Length: 309
Image (cartoon, rainbow, N blue to C red):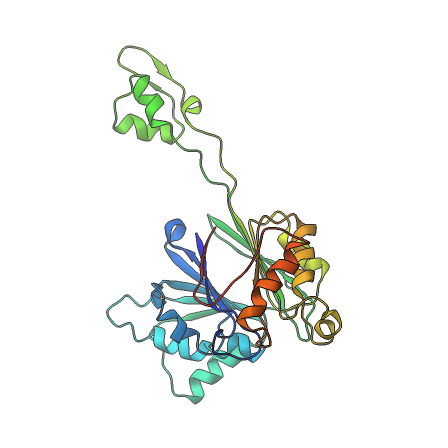
């Protein structure tokens, strides 16, 4: 499980940073990639990665500001040109209005897609659990921005315990079908009458990962709730230390406020994202240094960076 950042800038692209988009790569878990936001130019950035557009099965939009959605029509159209691959449907989750934006853009541009898009729109009254599969559950909650905006909490369900193959071999269990039965929790009896209890050779279930990805927001209680015990919290850091007033006026957070959210939530790691173009490369280390006085395990991400979870 990895997160790859396709755009880490705020508002408008700069030479160093494209606008908002990131990919949650679940290839080992479910052979899928989930996108979160899709700013302009995202499909150019994706060409510099190993991500195959057809692997993108779900897109989650935090809000309808242009720097988070203007890349959607282009990406959806380009995804249709992968003619040598199977055409697969795609789900888009986001605030009410995202369906109208996508369909209008495709209709006006005369774009025809060889796959279906399934839209899942929500408003303030229809948040909470928005998706559940056999391996993942996704929750959404409203944040505090200048327009309706949400954050997402992606929870991996507990993983099955692992089979202790070496102990089984030592107990005289021949490799083969019996291993499969024991892995499935079934007790077995060997030819010599030895009873093998499956529970003795399978470790306890492992807790799944929790990934919190927030849209644009002021510091908010909802941010903390979404990030409780998260393995990774992706939080915007449009502004820096001392910029609290301008951040509030524009519906954003500082690096210090993001660090406060991570600390209050008990998150394990904080990734600062959505960086204003006013910060030059020499300023980034200071953003991290300041935030680390509140929450130590913090990192300022850059475009195309890949973070293992």
